[in-house]
Length: 247
Ligand code: 13P
Image (cartoon, rainbow, N blue to C red; front, top):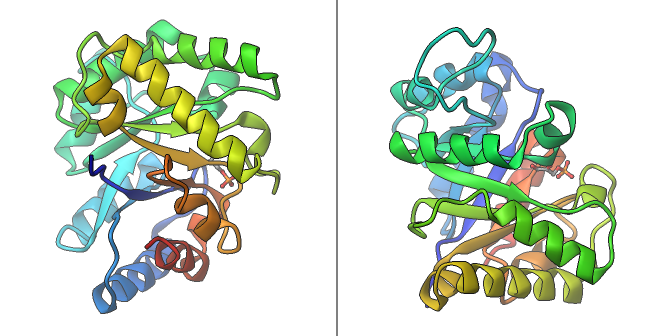
C-alpha cells in the first residue's frame, strides 16, 4: 500500500515575518526539483495568517502548532480550529510533547482537539512519544496516547508523528533499527484498534533531532513515511537537504 509522505517543519516559538526568506528559498528550490513528499510548515500563530496568504499558490502548505476544540468563546489566548481553517491553513499539529508537558494537555483534551480539527477539515499531525523507557512501558504509553484518536479515522486526514521526548532538540536519536521497529509496533497498535487496512495505510513520521546528516537513513526506513522537523526546519539549506534526501 502506497502511503503519503511528508516533510513537516515545526517552528515552535520561533520565526517572524522576516523568516519569509527561509520559506521563499524552500519554495524556490521545490520548483526546481522533483520530490515525492508533501511539504508543510507550521509557524507560530502570529504569522500563520501571513504565510498562508502570501504563499497560497506555492508548493508549501501551512499548519498550526495547536488548536482549541471550541469554535469560539471565553477562552483567553486560545485559537480555534475554525479560525485556523478560515485563514487558509490546512494542517494542525496536535498533542506535541511540549504541549503535553508545559500546558498539561490531557489525553481527553487532545482527543477533543483532534475531533474539532477534523470537523474543520484540517489534517491532523498527531504527535505521540515517550520519555526514555523500556519496550513494555513504551508500548503502554503509546497505546494510551493513541486512544486520543476518534473511533473512526481516515488515513488521509490523520498523520501520526512518533517523537521520543528524549530525542527532541538533543541531537540524539534512537537507532535506525529501533525507529523502524517502533513504527512497526505503532502500525500494529493502529491495526488492532481500527483495522489492518488503516494500520498499513496510515503515514507515520519520525521526529526528534532530524538533520541533513541523518535524514536519508531515517527517511528511507520501511516504516517511516516522513519527518517532523524542529530546529533544522528554521534553516532553509538544512530543510531543503532533508527534502532532497527523501527518495
Ligand atoms: P528537533 O528536530 O529540534 O529535535 O524537534 C523535533 C520536534 O519536536 C518537532 O516537532
